[in-house]
Image 1 (cartoon, rainbow, N blue to C red):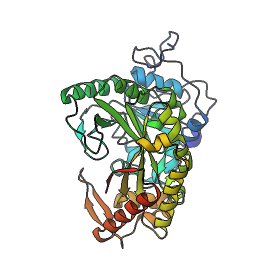
Image 2 (spheres, rainbow, N blue to C red):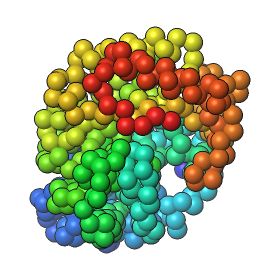
Image 3 (tube, helix red, strand yellow):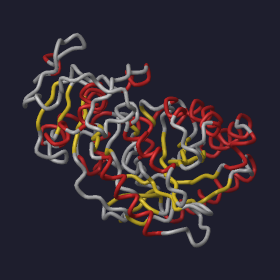
Image 4 (tube, helix red, strand yellow):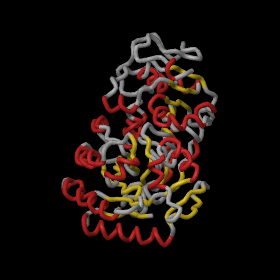
Length: 401
């Protein structure tokens, strides 16, 4: 179907390519916060921020995912979207395998969702940002950061895939946390709690615009005194302030010099807005850290990072500074992603793709990436440490690579 033929915002019903009998029960929607009971909550109106990111016209769904309570919640939130049955959320040839979608990179992120059931539930060790990487409740993002590693596996389109079996993910995490017992000693991830990254392949703040997966995870971690959830975000979603995390969820606001962000962080909240939100999130019960990421080496990078660190020092409340820590991550890039970016945002590649400064890197998942050369990266990390010490000495550096 050509985009112009898709249902518009005034369509009278949800068009579908497979039966919807099980997806729209006749009873009155429940008013409960989650959809676990089998009822479909009354969908909340999309916020202006959500409407900017998500004008969903098409939902590709595995039938089991669409028929689930969480799937029905999502369909109710986007009632005018065309519903398309797929065998697998990973294998949608005309979406992920369609090279022509590169030119529609941002539009696909805006207009398309994928619903699937996460079948493999594996928690794996990390040791950097978190002790453990949890099975995520989503994959992909409505934002379009030019350096994002997630699209490297998907091909020519990277919309959000929401996994609707969040209850199974939570049950898996509960069993995993119980097996660990109390944390035996402090480490760089946390002095007391086992830290679980719950958003490795997406942005939980954006996911919360779509459904209650993020809320369910935050609420679950409140009950686990030996564990803590963690996710990085580039989007300020103030609806998260009402979830009462009780100190059991760490939000890591990713920041970079605004000059870099305007070029590379497409569709994200402005850096100044992310920083300004830190105090509100701390007051609401979150732990607040920062990702200085990615650090992109280009003329003037040292001066711009110094200015950003001074801004953090000037505007952050003392309470945020007292508990803040940071990760420093220099850019890692990928040739396949470079080729995709040339099709929709070539100007970004003038900064990201620097063969004169980069060398091949085999990542932990086997991907063939590129990173800054050894003789370039080491001095850059040392320089950024010096800038932090000079302009934000209160900011604990958890790790840098």
